[in-house]
Length: 128
Image (cartoon, rainbow, N blue to C red; front, side, top):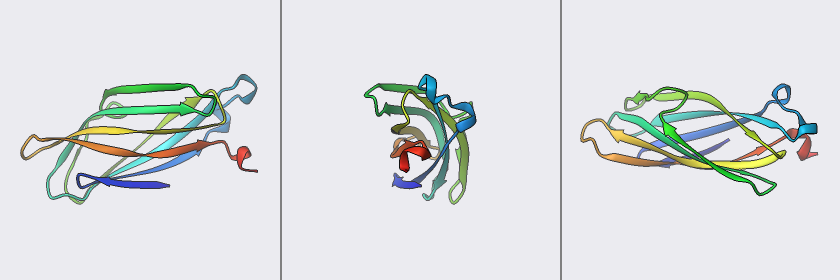
């Protein structure tokens, strides 16, 4: 589990290898990740956009960018958190992800760029 605080917003990431959705013989590895976004500030924030960098250990790199997360643009009140689960597929058994959320301070409409800490995606059999 990794955590980072930016602009008064804490991002925590947990990862899970998904063997039932993976096919190593075809170089298909599925990973789920749970993100907890906690508002440590005194202002409500709205998550507007996400921007991901996804890197496989075989050297492939891609970016994913779009509105909200899992179809939502949640407003997170001070002291509250929002949690969601999503997934990423890799072409190798190891990789990493990192990125940013674009959020809006709901009081003054200021845009905030909140860092998503880099996290590892490693199939458990690689750790032996």
